[in-house]
Length: 482
Image 1 (cartoon, rainbow, N blue to C red):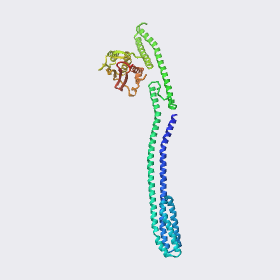
Image 2 (tube, rainbow, N blue to C red):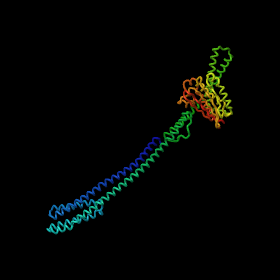
Image 3 (tube, rainbow, N blue to C red):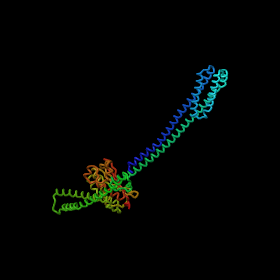
Image 4 (cartoon, rainbow, N blue to C red):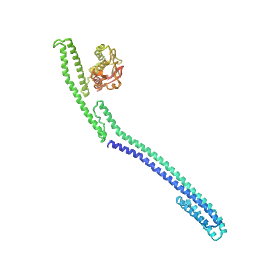
């Protein structure tokens, strides 16, 4: 599955999870709307029917009185019409409420119809007095009709309250269910989203870490990258692995080339150095002062070239793992004395306050590679300190011991290193400022770092522009771990 497909499926799942509670909520709202419409229509129709029956009952009573007092065809037709209206509205109420609710009113209506026919018969035969007496006897039927109609109205009202209560229950249930469904959907959506984020971010984080290591010069593809995935991340991982293999091969070829070229350069350099010594000794005849001055410059540059070639060889061997240190017990104070003697003349020449101090707890001996610590670590650090410390400045080499560790600190009052460049000073060929580029190769600190780490130690730097630079070296006293 591709990353695009995974993202689309995740999006579809999230949409589905959010649509389900929304669809349920819409369904319940529609149900509530139907209840409200039914309540409005049915309840209103029932109330209207009750009102119509009540009006017909009152009109029937009036018409009966008028017909008894003064018989007339219009009164008779009016009574028949009201009875028909009453019966029609009762049929509607019966259909809505049921026969039990309207049975009393139906009985009263039948009695009223029968009384109306009886009155018409009496009046039609001219027995008005008898009709008047009969009317007085059946007049309470109107009151019975009103009472029966009130009971029907009570049924309508009770049914309305029940419908409202039911709608409230539906609303509360829908609210609870919708809230729970929305919460569950939210949790599932979060889980699905987190799963997708983890499925994509974890391999990308591994690739990012591997890329950072490649940027630092470690040309090896980690085995835990998702090489077996069939999506874009898997393709990227496999391409990254192939790239690192190629870079490792190129780096190896470069190291071999540098090593071979440096080794081949040593022979002609040694030949030049040998002949300059022979010329200086006068083996080929005497030299005038100007010639000796030029010869001294040639010897100086030959020595510089020799140091550069040796540094290139050492660095390439360190990177290839072919250069081993030779740790052995070393008298620490003797080592410090040798380093001090090496730079004492230079300090006097540049009028720099140079001091070497053995601090508290300094051990008598330590297991380390004497020559490499002296020349390639302390020598390189002090050479840089003298290079960047102006006349009248101060340089200190301090040594101390604590908890089975041997520490060195080199401080100077030189120009200092800008903060944005400090983290790069141990990189190959990296130099701070144009002045440094004209005075060195940028290999000294890289070699010093390799030597210190080969001893199982650490080296770090701190600096303030215009205030100076400090290098701290921490080494195990008993030598590098096996």
